[in-house]
Amino acid sequence: MGLISKQIHQRATNRLAQPTRAVTRLDVDQALDTLRRVIEQTPSKTGLLNSGEKLWLAGQAPGPWSVYYGPPSRKDPSKVVPTWTTHVTLKASSTGTETLVTISLAKWKTRDGKLVGRREFEQFLEDVAAQMAARDPSYSALDAS
Image 1 (cartoon, helix red, strand yellow):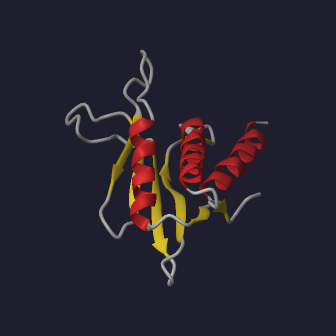
Image 2 (tube, helix red, strand yellow):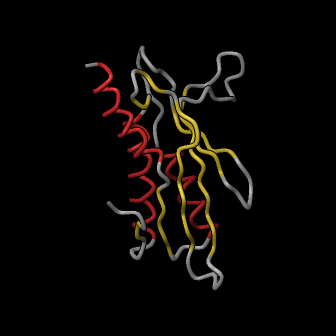
């Protein structure tokens, strides 16, 4: 019985591990600014459990940028102990009129076959899509299922 539920959750995690791709008319700098805005506007968790977990952005041009989710390190609060890590690639088209946004889950922790922080990961994807669509109404996902 445990294996069956684990396989079901594993399928869900594998689905989440598939890259999310979308196209926007924003240039690379505007798309990166939108990504930064999502990370800054996402509040860190408070309370006794999972306190301080938040989104962190690292990387430099031309990318890919890494987005980490997790609490700050106890030894060095300026560093993160990642629960999951995504790579965000922003690639301009040859004409420079569109940007391909690719978000892929690179590293993650699982518990009983489930992605730890899954709700936060899905919320991150939704927030990025919503912010991009707010700035560019032509924003569209390529892998919509």
